[in-house]
Image (cartoon, one colour):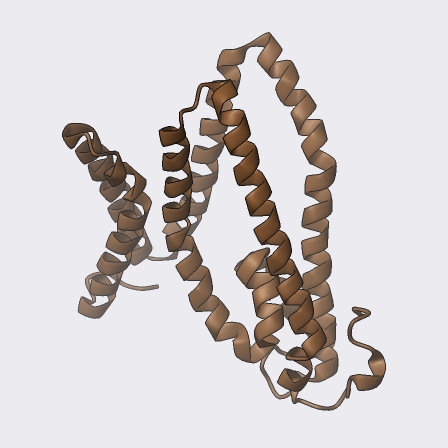
Length: 254
C-alpha cells in the first residue's frame, strides 16, 4: 500500500472511491511528476542543442526535429486523452494524470488495475469497487511503472556498451538498426490490430497510403512540413475512413 495513503483513512467497505482518489497528497504527487518531466524535457532539449554542432546538425534541422516530434505526439496524445477522460471516474484525476496521462500505457495500467481488483473479487467501477480495492489497484499500477523505470535505468548502460562495440565493428549497421527497430515496433503494433475486423484492416491500409502520399507530395513540392505532418494526416484519415465504414456498414465490425 502506498505510504501516502495510510490505512486509517481507508474505509474498506466504502464505495466512495473518488473521495480517496482525489486526496490533496495525490494531487501534490501528480504535480511533482509533471514538474520532473518538464525539467527532464528542458535538460534534453539543452543537451540536444549543445551536441548538435558536433554531429553536423544545423539550428534549422534541430528546430525541424523538435517541431516534428511535437506534431507526431499530437495523435497518440489525443488517443490517450480520450481514454483517460473515460477513466477519471474509476481512478480519479491525480492517479489518471500520473499513471496514464504522463508515464504509463493505457493498456498496461488498466490491465494491471483490473488484475489487482480481480484478486480481491472486485471489478473496476462495479459495486464491489471499494476504497480498499482502489488502493490495491493503484499500488499495482505504481509498482508496474516503477519496474519500467528501473529496467530503463539498469539496461540503458548495458545497451550503450553494446552500441559502442557495434559502431566500432560496423558503423553502417548502427545506421540501419534504429530504423529497423522503429519499423518493427510500428508494424508489430499495427499487425496486432488487423485480425480484429475488416474496419481495422481498412484503417491500417488508409493510414499507410496517406503517409506514402504525404512523403511523395513533400518530395515533389519540396515542402518538408508535409512530411512532418504525415503522421497526423494519417491518423485523421484512418479515423475518418473507419467512422464512415462503421456508419455505412461497409464491413463487419467483428
